[in-house]
Amino acid sequence: MSILVILEQRAGVWNRMSFETLAAAAEMGRQLGQPVLAAVAGERAAVLAAEAAAYKIDTVFAVEHPLLARYTADAYTTALEQLIRRVNPELVLLPHTYRVRDFAPKLATRFGRVLVSDAIAHRIEDGRPVLVRQLFQGKLNADVRFASAPPNFASIQAGAYRADSLAPGAAAVESFAPDLAAGRIRTQPGEPFRESQRGVDLAAASIIVSVGRGIKEKDNIAVVEQLAQALGAELAASRPICDNGWLPMERQVGSSGQTVAPKLYLAVGISGAIQHLVGMKGSKTIVAINKDENAPIFEVADYGIVGDLFEVVPALVEEIRKAKG
Ligand SMILES: Cc1cc2nc3c(=O)[nH]c(=O)nc-3n(C[C@H](O)[C@H](O)[C@H](O)COP(=O)(O)OP(=O)(O)OC[C@H]3O[C@@H](n4cnc5c(N)ncnc54)[C@H](O)[C@@H]3O)c2cc1C
Image (cartoon, rainbow, N blue to C red; front, side, top):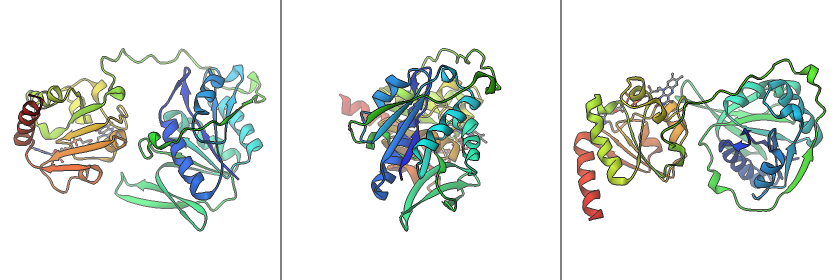
């Protein structure tokens, strides 16, 4: 038995959640003594499969067919169904992306299974994986055990596992050509949606200062701007700040904004709602400044400062400037 990871790419570019999911599979594989396999379908699949083969996994399948060039749920489901029947894995893991939400329940249904969606962690009990999912906006955690025979299906939440925990290796690359017929694909993809040109690439930033509703009003944004400047950081925000138009939407971090994983993430006056956490909890070091010692952000923070941001931030700026001389 094995664990198969379905990696995601768009227009030949990796979705980095693919590698977080691969890291989850690698950890489970080690614990269960099972090989980890991966698959990538669509544009540039062979090139991307060769890239993914640089990790310590067994085999990467390049799922190639002209009808996979543009994503459709029908073609992806059928192609991956054929691959899964051939590989016969115990578990199929997918990154919990919008695309996976679109086709993965249908893929699981082809095997009479359900998709255990948006898992945040796992442990092994009696030689079998137990997945953890959040309920009621993160207020409760539920353990999910698979009652059905393999294959079982699960998707992994953004930021739940660290892609940089993947060990280098040299996996085999295999080409897999599914049997697809144009007549069975019921949707015709249109032109891909073009996002407006982003002035800021938060995903590439190594330091982010992120501001929340604790800042109280637009004019106060200057307070955190100074901290960002002192640290050479990008400025980001929680959703209410962008909804109010105090910072542009492209700076929003969270489930309906960007997913970031900088070396340092400073959360200033942010409570730590689950929709915000999913976008930043993959950061290497998290520092939270909040006047409420019970704010949920402190549960993910490596360093917490309980205090009024209007006192703490200027003091920090002064110390950083001094330290930089
Ligand atoms: C479908 C959906 C999608 C969503 N997507 C996102 C998303 O992508 N990103 C996102 O961020 N949110 C998102 N949200 C909203 C989310 O649920 C929260 O409402 C939001 O994250 C809260 O933002 P906040 O922490 O800035 O504000 P609040 O929750 O109001 O927290 C403000 C914090 O500031 C602290 N504070 C106040 N004054 C001070 C002070 N002087 N000094 C220090 N601390 C102070 C308070 O103690 C509090 O903890 C989404 C919600 C839904 C329903």
